[in-house]
Image (cartoon, rainbow, N blue to C red):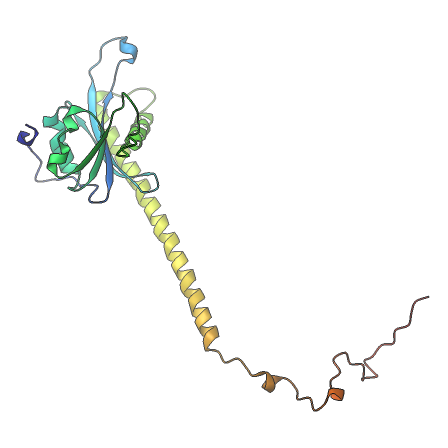
Length: 232
């Protein structure tokens, strides 16, 4: 039974958990050093488990990655419990090791990649984590990399991506702060304008006793008037 999986964790240094209620996390397992078309010298397969928060409106958020000895449920389930908060909605493929995640306090939806990459019924999709794998592979040195350096390369990739996320969040906060400041300044100006007393028209315009005194064009002033003659 899946509940009989031995749950082990390092109590001295627990990883920071991602996800939570109302959050979607895509999880997937990937293999490194797969033989292309099953040709060439047989290489040792290195499995990696990863997860990433899918942001509303697209994009990715917090993530985790780590090398695992295999992709059995005895290996993967404890890792997921260590890295994902309870109540998280998890999207994954139909790998059998993931099928019991709903019994651990998660909302689990799956998509069958043999048929489609998006499940219209439950909206499950793993395109975000698949794209993250591509970014990881592209970060590897073109000259090749040894197995012993793989863990360090994954750590470096996670650190860089984390810094990028922090920079994006900082810029968003800065933009919101500037907008709030502009709105506050505008509101203060409007309040000051409302508080100012508008002078009465009778206090600023000269009093006119009769219509004969009103000469807007200055026609009654001989010095300022100009004589117009028709052109020939």
